[in-house]
Length: 275
Image (cartoon, rainbow, N blue to C red):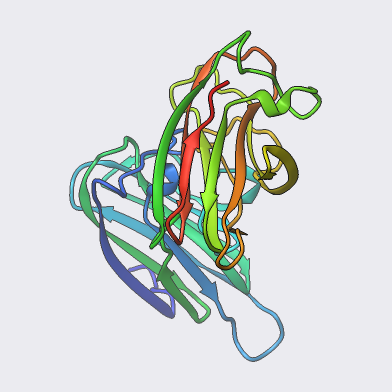
């Protein structure tokens, strides 16, 4: 019999209609169950931890477990940020070896190969150093969500990235708020092939004049999971404020549909602006 790691913890949960996100090329990968793994180590010199993480599905679905750096909600899959991976999706059971991880926090994502493969599952973590593990809340948990659809159309509103003088003529959405509130936005192009390089930005918008940028998703990327801004506070207390959300592609005259998810802690009004 193989020796068991000194520290073991087992969690049981399920992939359901809102949490069966599919594999890493799925736009919904970030919806899969995620867990924060915190390796505490011992009281001596900084040490490294080794062990194994296994995943077992109640149904005969192909499954995978992947470990990322950071301990935060994974919103985009990057190989450079992956520290362990069970490899190819395997029917009903998979495992990955943990070899020499430093103390700190990591994110475990468990997934089925296709979205909407529903099943209960058991996640077992065994390490040779003390650790803790806890679920990570989904993106926008506890916030109001708006789902808006749009399209970049060549010759109309597909004006390219920031090097273009007409970047603000890309698809735009007007946000009105009557108080200070936390917001974030995610932009995805799940139907596009190939995936365009995209970005999303939020600008102040006073008296119909585009003001300074308040938030941005950063560099243009063609990740299947899209791009997202960080949690940002918009508005001021007891006063009406307006902002403009701009969805853009790096290349001009891109022809592609997109989905904008906008989250807010308090009620806001968001509407598309005619071009």
